[in-house]
Length: 345
Length: 223
Ligand SMILES: C[S@@+](CC[C@H](N)C(=O)[O-])C[C@H]1O[C@@H](n2cnc3c(N)ncnc32)[C@H](O)[C@@H]1O
Image (cartoon, rainbow over the protein chains, first blue to last red):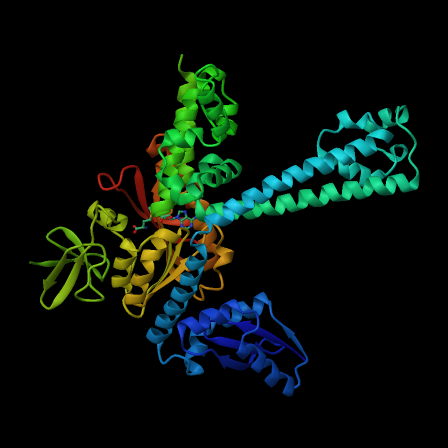
């Protein structure tokens, strides 16, 4: 026999194959205890109910059955009273509120100074990029002995790696564009063993890119929590770098926009100071990589950089002090203002 | 001072000001004024700080919030408005409040603790699947004040998951967050057209001068 187990905030329900409730183990009536149990995969009551069910002849247990969850939730108010967990609606509602206060407190606590995770992850990505470069170079150099023409034909590193994995030697490449070049390639012949090594190098590159993708997704989620407005305006990558450079949201939120504009240009700034005015003073730091600046003509870039920096500094303050999300709106405003600047003579 | 009734049984007016009956007599939430009339304590619902109050001031006839309702509130922030909702639904009603941002949310927690009829949920309203197991009820009313550019999609997705058939949805449309360049009237028109596919529009009113470029809409779910 199979049983469905459903965890709710009042306890664990067990349903039989026809999705009829066969047992219920209440949680203690304490918000904080329940919050911990909601976090745990198998709280105490979960283990207890399983033992009880095994004695009743149930053999397999299913946890994540959406239909059972829905059924139990729909009837939870009724069950709470039937099983004497709450004496009335009022008590039930108050307990529901209490539990979620506890759940939220825990979430918030774990949010405190999560900006250090942003900094760490950003650094990890930087380091990873260096490794990727090294491995890509190894891979391209190695396979380039066999098929030198491909180096320029395929500029995307991941794609390059995938081609090695898929075809092995250049003779097997069926991609029509590459095939032409493979047929009269200048490269040396590869043995099976040579191909084996090339494909290990390619595997490495693919793995590293996967890892990079995971880290950058994670970074994106972190930024939504820690700096939703700031990252909406700056984009994840630039936002993370700026936060790292500043040393956290706390410091970032206190910086004047002129400082934000120059964050990341420290080297150029020192060069300028040392040269006693003989080299150019830097106009912008990391934000220079922002598409709104990159895609604008050089004579407008300075003005756009100032605008962007001032909007970023407002966003950082909102994130740090109120946290209210207004990113979409601010982004639209920014784009409108940039349009105006671009129209100016 | 005479206490006037409004269409909502638990919302009143005293000398033109919108008020609700204080659920926790003797306590203020955001510095609002308290008025005692015939042994009942009312809290003034500040129209400059809360959109439903502004809408009622501006002549909204039908604000469907009633005693004992279960409400889903998207973008509850620190609970300024929700505290009045909490007064209206009363002890046996319930407000599920979703907020994405930790900072206003932190201030909501003590309010939830005091009132007992607010369920605080720290989550993104764009991802209702993240809190579908927290909300165990089908709700009577969805109130949304999130000011994102996809606020209509967000509302509809939440209604599909949580709103009772024939339930109410109340929305504050902020024209600036949907489109900064188009004239607000144009934005409202387009939004209403979209909303009409899902809802019957019961009432609407602009919030000027309390909130610029906002349209307050009361609707009934067609499903
Ligand atoms: C205009 S304020 C709401 C004020 C509140 N309704 C009141 O009157 O007391 C908008 C709120 O929505 C929140 N918000 C924005 N996007 C959100 C989302 N995707 N999910 C949940 N809350 C969101 C913001 O953080 C902000 O607190």
